[in-house]
Image (cartoon, rainbow, N blue to C red; front, side, top):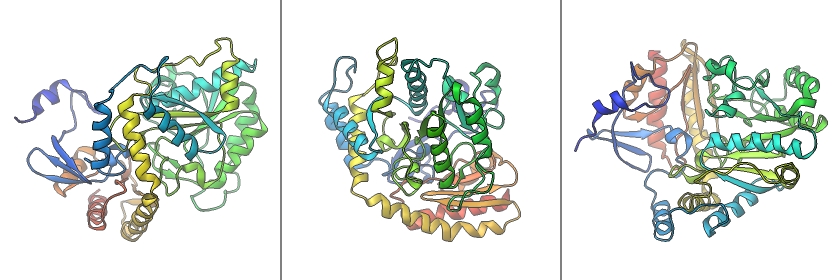
Length: 424
């Protein structure tokens, strides 16, 4: 039976797509390793890790087994008043992997919700500290933290994808996006905007929230670790909490366990998602320190006021445990280093093209930034014809392939990226 593309086109709303003039959708029937198989038999090499989540490839036998074994026990049970071993094991691992001060884990069901949880934690903490006026946030221009209402309020309000909603969202503060390139010292004056805002508004700021090292959906921008070090110093100086959004940068993607490891900073709260289950089931986590948890429980409510229905889902926790076990074998470090080395060798020839503004590589992330926005529909069809799955946005043609990709498959992705840049 064929997938009903006409029904899909007329009734199903895909992300960031018009219903009156939808982008084409390609019907998937199977996936294995780094390959996605379409209904017509076409096989595509996946350069996107299904929006940065599939670390170990599709249809992974160990992940499949973990899911199936848990399914035979319990697929879901409410987390209010009940617990289970997969959640306990997962939270133990997350506490061990993250900075030592992060000892409390709150599980949720998506990255955006993890950000909402982090923001609510910060606000409720200051209520517990008898400083309820501290309820606004300082973020960075070009930042992105999710699509729900609270998360949207700390995304770039002008150039970001949520600018349409600016007038309806809580009004936050935004420092200029960091300009100091990754791997280089802080440029003179680069922290001035941030320092001025936190100095002026610290009495009303609950927290700073940022994406460490890589600003993802805001343009795939890589910035200096010295900027993060400066941010942490100013947060401590002015008594403002620091939230590191590691949903896109966590679990090896940038070459370290977490983006914050590039600067050895210690946040008060961290958010995780996307890669947590290896791309199998949606799951996210927000971790905080004992001090934050105590402050929250000292507030008038006495408890943290949040509780997702599918919080701590056993299936998700079980597959996350297996995914993290695979990562902890340390194979990912060699895998990511190999990807980074090959991306550096093969992408930088694009720097000479007149259509290209910049080529950037960090960890398993490769970016060709053009001078003008891409034609999404045109390039999407082109990439499928080349036998690859790459979904560009704005001026960025980029890839974040699964860690298990082989050299030949990665070369096919980089060749397609360069060809696309030539025709743009």
